[in-house]
Length: 469
Ligand SMILES: *Cc1c(COP(=O)(O)O)cnc(C)c1O
Image (cartoon, rainbow, N blue to C red; front, top):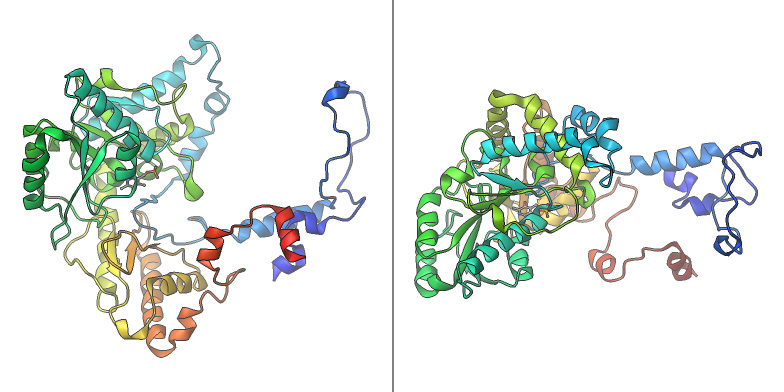
């Protein structure tokens, strides 16, 4: 297809001496570059005509998949609806052209916008202060744990070095605790997928005086609402620990209930998840940390300047355009969409934890285990039908996890199309399992060898030539 015609790399299309156009020589914009800074040889740049270049990059861009191409049911990452107007607001020249070192008196507007966002986040979370310095959720977790650590140390309570983390937690929770120099105490989940209070009581009895904090996500990574937060918070507070809320899943609670009211002392928000910044491919992010009154003096300085400003401006635009009343509809609509898909598919896909889910839910592969078709195969086959794959093999609680999360603004027709294809794949698994197991068949590249790709990634052009020879 296109790829063959236009080449995989622009260097492969290069023909010596070929040009798009060249500007006539003139003396404007010419600089005398000191001899010692000049190249000895010309840079090895591809030489192509303009149409070849434009087609090459246009075709490459079409090999990509994103929310602007089609449905993107990825779970856990809370890929929300990202209104285009937020991009325009963040790209206003007054925002975009700011420089962190320009005179302070010229940045008052930007600072006011940050304060506005802080005020709105305080209202939405029930916490008293936010720092916007962290650049991602995981960075926020580390910052929040440093706040907690600083607080305990300020009380002379230096032996509190342990953090309680549920076994369903996102991997960044134990990782951040470890980076902060803290140890992890894992608390089990019940068969219903919620924190096991009996197990937590046991841990508190054993380790109470060493517990610095407990980290929780709510709704948790199974998309279930933790219903015993007040009891959990009491257990942790009574033994002297603080409650940390991982706000990555904040969106179903927006405008409905607040972590601050539930007993959480410190939290982070993934602005790029809950407040509309497209972040496929790992960035950009912003993980502001909020604290209860009295903890703000323990904010560490984790980055220079003010954090990821453009992400903050998208968040501000998102909250302001929704307004007080509509912000309450985000959660219920996302929840309705998730439950609609779940109920429409649970006769063919294994639903390990039944009941009402929040904004996301988890299947444990196909119901019919005799086909040999795995979650990986289903994810690959979805690509053939023009859908992005859901999150797979996370959470780790099940062998064949397939985690689905629609956003609040997907239409019923889109959801029905996805349900249709998921049912068709289940049918194929029964009648023609090899077709599914060898998918994808219609993508530019077939199934890659994951292990080889992870262990021996070829990331440079040169290396590729060498390998081919
Ligand atoms: C995404 C996520 C994180 C980590 O956030 P990043 O911004 O990717 O660093 C932490 N916890 C949960 C529950 C998440 O979904």
